[in-house]
Image: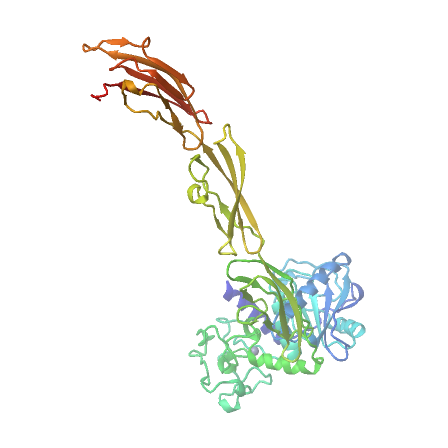
Length: 594
Ligand SMILES: [Zn+2]
């Protein structure tokens, strides 16, 4: 596909040179010149290269389309080196011309559609029997140019047809079909800069039979030669010593040279055989070029273009500096990366700009239009930008803020239930943990709200944990600690296992201790008195035992006799209702026989 496209272009370029831009049928202009707009203004017409774009085949309702097509071409031209860095040499003008009908003639003689339309400059395809070669009424075009832009240097008619085609000359013409903007720039290379075609065929590779050897006449154009003596080549000063001359040679002069670029991906100036419509004995400066195959202009052509434009260049104007900003970046950790943006800077001369940034970021300086720089601290910083066009420079600054607005992420310990005699400090109930993007060590604190429970020893602690980073961002979570009392008191009867009758009367006061309640209630709730016969029969002795109980105290006034068992029951209860019961029994024994 690509080869075919190149062949089409080559075919057409060849005929462009062969036939030039000639007027076709001279007919009265079918339409109206509306007016002229200076769409790129870099100064007085007398001082600049005046490129004039002219509408052809656009009706009155299509003038805005012409304006858009013209602007698209200008954008393309000024994005194409070396025009991309030398735009201030140009003024560009747009002449709006309304045609009675839309499009361009496309004769059936060239297998066209047969379209015939009344247009101002009589644009037509099929010049000389080649569909893609266009013709126009050049006299009319020059008339319009002289009237509208007397200082015009190059005219380019844009014909409103999507069929691919065009023609060169002092008033060039292009359709808006295919890669027409490249084609127009190629023709511009011929017309304004006297550049030759650098390709090596006429009708096409594999078609030509009379293009084997270039005539032994040196071409006048600066970008093709028949000279093979290195010292005499027109562009010898651009050929490095290490580059062989010739750089490539065509092994078969009956054909286009099929070898590829000996310096793949590079543009190395040398002497490449095959140029100026011949397979052999003619040479071009580079493997590829806009004048060969729509590649970027080669260094030789570039130098010629710059020499031609030099008188049209205005004095340098310093670039405008735009550091963009303010930049606000969220802290990313110990360092934070910020992409600076100097792309708002500009230069009316289209000079390439260099960017030098300085500021309190790592390294202190950075280069490039949009460098990423690394800050190590939080804060508000000034970033300086110097923009240079190689001759003059300007400086500007922007503010960069590295901030931390994101709170730590906190995790609370699990809710927990603890006995009332256990500690409720975090070493027992758990610590919260926190992580923070910016602060490696957020501070963790807690505060408690205590809600009393159903009894004095029980409570609910609502513990709010808070993690706070160095910038004061904080987040909280809540842990609930239930303090409970499930442990009953422990009873001590404070009584021996035996007494002897003379001991009476004797009192025993039971006590109780509790894990939490300092003063659990104790009460003796009853007693019994009995003894067992030798046969094991239980005999009630409550009639003979004289016992009083009062609260937590039992008083044995009369033990009732040896071998009696006096048994009493004790109950205790803490504040939280944990109750316990116990019995204690004393045996009444003979004083001499305990
Ligand atoms: Zn070139």
